[in-house]
Length: 129
Image (tube, rainbow, N blue to C red; front, side):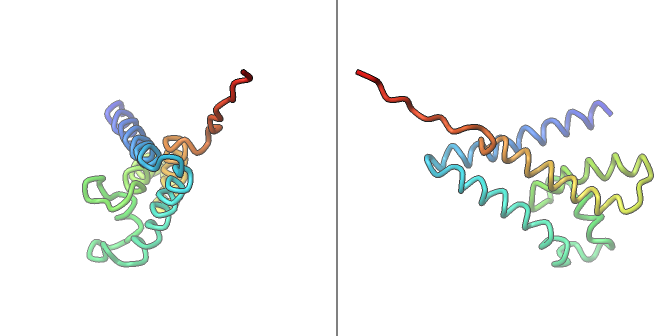
């Protein structure tokens, strides 16, 4: 369990850093670029599930939820895998689909926080000289 928590923490930090990097490189247009980055990552989930990219492995949703980060095409896979492991321990039905939803939400929130979307923009104050 401590190893799983360490890996989860590392995934969250690296995901937030990727969104921060997009925001940093985008300059004054960081908000639309980070939102586009999040949108592309979120829209990747149904594409991976419906495209049959992993069709040789059986249940596509379970494969996407359990796909290791090294072979994943999006940030959702590691987050969904952590939720799937946790839900499987509790015996939840449909844990793959629930894990995909929870992984997508956690990924999007991590990217929004890392990309500084949820923080107030800094407005320079004019001097009253």
